[in-house]
Image 1 (cartoon, one colour):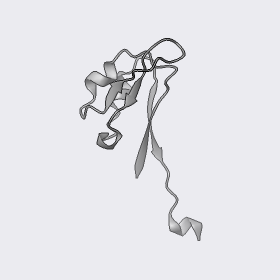
Image 2 (cartoon, helix red, strand yellow):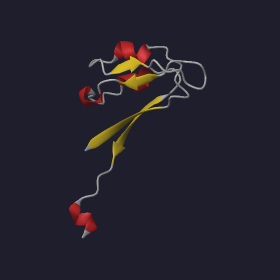
Image 3 (cartoon, one colour):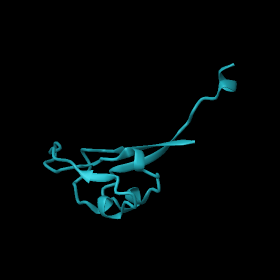
Length: 78
């Protein structure tokens, strides 16, 4: 089972709460400004993410989501 980490760069205000609580230091604030004038968060080290959802819980703007990726099995294709 795999997961996907997604950040809505428009909703993110760059408060840094998710960066502070990430146990694996995966997240960092971007150097690029979003359309709202904020510096959104991004996954600097996506391979280190353990998909614990702590960042999702801490985000006051609900800008981060972690979703389960449904993988098709070979049996379903046959």
